[in-house]
Image (cartoon, rainbow, N blue to C red):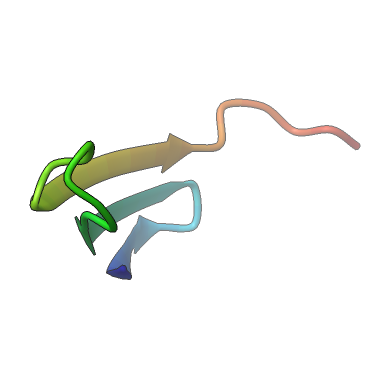
Length: 43
């Protein structure tokens, strides 16, 4: 598996990852995308 992230701003991060299956029960390759957004302030 490998991945990368890109900080769009201080509050928004995009990410992408690719993984290879470990056995015949899993897909040969998987492509995953993600988004992390900070929508509030804790302190």
